[in-house]
Amino acid sequence: MLGLLVQFWRLWSLSATYDQGIFNQVLWNSGHGRWFASSLSSQLSSAVLHGGLAPDPSYQRLGQHYTPLLLLWAPLVRWLGFAALPLVQVGLMTAAGLVLHRLARGLLPAGLAAAVACSFYGAQAVIGPTWCNFHDLCQLPLLVFLLLLGLLERRWWLLLLAALLIPLVREDTGVVLFGMALWMGLRRKAPWWVAALIGLWGAAWCVVVTSVLMPAVSADVSKRFMVENFGQYTPDAEELSSLEVLKGLLRQPWRLLWELINPPGKTLGYLAAQWLPLMFVPALSLDAWLLVALPLAGLLLARGSNDPLSINIRYALLVAPGLFAGVVFWWQQRSQLFSRRRLRRIWTGCVLLSLLLTLISNPNRSLSFLVPDSFVPWVHVSPLQQWRHGRLARQALAVIPPEASVAANTPLIPLLSHRRVLVRLPAWHQWQDSDGQRHNVDWVAIDTAQASRRAEAFAPDRRRQLQLQLQLRDLQLQGYSPVANADGVVVLRRS
Image (cartoon, rainbow, N blue to C red; front, side, top):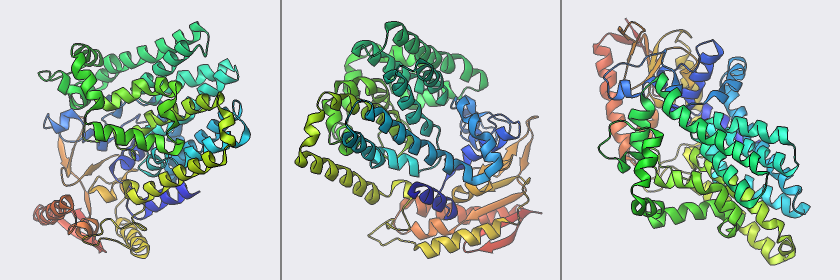
C-alpha cells in the first residue's frame, strides 16, 4: 500500500519523469495497435542523436530494448490509464516477495522464512526500483522466484514457463537465466538436461535478439547501447554486437579482472548495500555468488549515462533476486543459528538500517515531500505546495486536445504521454512523419517551477532554468502564443 501511495504521489506531484512517459506511450500505442511505437523513444535513437533526424512517432522501441513481455500490460494501460503502471510495478514486486516467502517456507522454519521475506521488502535494492519510474525489470524477480519454486516443488511446468518468460523481459535477462542454469548444473539442483535446456535457451535468445532481431528494427543496439556501455573494450569500433563485446573482453583478461573490482570503494559499497538487509549472509553463500555472477559481472563491466551500480535504479533487480534465493539455500543447512536471540536482533537492525538509508537517500526524489532536496542551501517543497502544483498543472494542461502533437519538458511528459506525437523540450519541438517531412508541434507545455525551485542548489537545474526561459522567448517569436499559465506551468499554442 505504501508503495502505491508513493507511486501515485509521484504522478500527482510531477516527480515521475521521462521513462514513465516512455512506457506509458509505448503501451498506450500498443493498446491501439501501434506495437511498441514511441516518439519519446525515437528521441533517444541513434538516428536522432547522431543522424540529425527528427523524432518519429512510428519508431519502435524494440530497437533499443527488446521487451515483448510488456504487451501483457497494454490492455491495462488502455483501460486504467495512468494508474495502470504503478499498479503493475508495485503488484509484481509485492507478489515476488510472497513467492519468495513460499519458496523459503518449503526449506526453512516459519520464522526464518518470514525473516527472509521481511528482508526483501526492507531492501534498498527492492524499494528504490519499486518507487522509481516504471521499468521492464520489475517483472524479473517474480519470474526468478517462480522458476525456483517450480524447481523446489518439482512442478516442471512452472519451471519451464518461468524459464520461457525470463528472456522475454528484456534482451539482457537471458544472461540471468543462463546464470541460473549454470547454478543448477554445478549444484546439481536439477537434471542435467533441464539445466542444459534452460541455459541454451537463455544464451541463444540473448545472442539472437541482440544480433538479429533488434538490428532488424533499428541500429540502436549496435550504434548506441553496445558502444556506450562496452565500447571501452573495443575503442575503435563504431558499431558492436554482443559477440564482438564478448570477444573484446576475452582478449583482455587482465583488464577484465581489473574492471570487475574498479573502483574498489564503489564496488564494495554497492555489494554492501545489496547484502545489508540479509545481514551480509550473501557474501558467505556459494549459491548466491553462482546465481548472481553473470548479471553482476555485466553491471561491473558496463559504463553508461545511467550508473549501473546505483542501488536505487532498475539494474539492482538483475542481482537482488539471486542474492535472496542464495540466502535461502544457505540457511537451509544452518537454520538452527536462527534460534539465537542476538543474531535475530542483529538481523532486525540490518533491515532497519537498510530502511533508514533508503529514506535518507530519497530514491529518485520519490520522498521529496518528506526529505529536503538540499540542506545547504535549503531546498524543500512542502506536500501542500506539491499537491497544489500538481492540481494547477493539470488545469493548465486540460486545454490541450487529446490527439494534438505536443512538446513538453520532463516533469510534464508522463501526464501527456497518452498520445501519438510527444517530444521532449528543450531538445525538440518538431517531429517527422513517415515521408520524412518535419512538422512543428501544435502545442507546447513547460513547467518552469521545478527548475527554478532547485536552481539555487543544483547547477543542472540552473542551466535548465535558463534554457527554458530562452526557449519560451524563442517559441513566442516563432508564432506560439500563451493560452494558460498556472503556478509556473505555461501552455502555448501554435498560431
